[in-house]
Structures are given as structure tokens and as C-alpha cells.
Length: 146
Image (cartoon, rainbow, N blue to C red; front, top):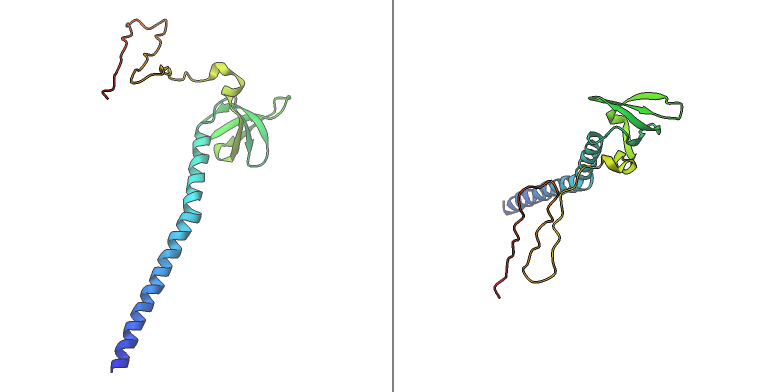
């Protein structure tokens, strides 16, 4: 009778070890396979949603061209000097080789004005006002109490 009690305890422990190993394998698969794949898919979707007219792209079929029009789920690219135009799904874009902003700097979005800072303790320099700003800029200084 005592031996049957030990046998029952041993089978319970081994079943917990087996369940624990399955859980451990599932966690490892999640962090090594599933999570990186989801991150890669998210980055690809962000890249495809950021396409602009003028971008030079490469498709999943290896066709290189410049985007001439973008509709909801399709893009049209020119592939040669003969101005051959081909229409593709957005999902067929593998990579953006040259952004339109890089080719034409006037297309770049205006970056927020950076605030230059003076070297020194606790003083913050004001941002330089633009010519079209009408409100006067007040100089703000903060001093640290030592």
C-alpha cells in the first residue's frame, strides 16, 4: 500500500515536469520565432504605408522603378526611360531604395525648430524667433539651487 502511494506521487511530479517543459518550449518558440516575425511584418506595413510618389522601389519580383501614382491598394511605377508603366499591389513592394525627399530636398517635411542651449549651469537659451513670428520671445532662465 505504501508503494502505491509513492507511485502516485511520482506520476504527479512527472506530469508537472512534462507540462512545465511544454510551457517552456512554447515560450521559447514565441520569443525566437513568432515575436520577431510580427515585428518584421509591422515594419514592412509601415514602409508600405509611407510610400510616396517619386520613391524608387524594388518589388518582390525584382522590378525596379519609380512610383508615379498611388491609389488605395495599388501603385503605378515607371520602369525605364521609355516610361513603361506597371501597376502593382502595395504588398508587392519589397523595399524603398531612394526616397523622394532624398532626391528632391524641397519635398522634405519641415523639422521642428531645435532649441540651441548655452553651455553653463541651469540656463536654457530661448529658441530663435522666425521672421513670421509676431509674438515677442521671452527669455527664460532657470537656476539650480545648490
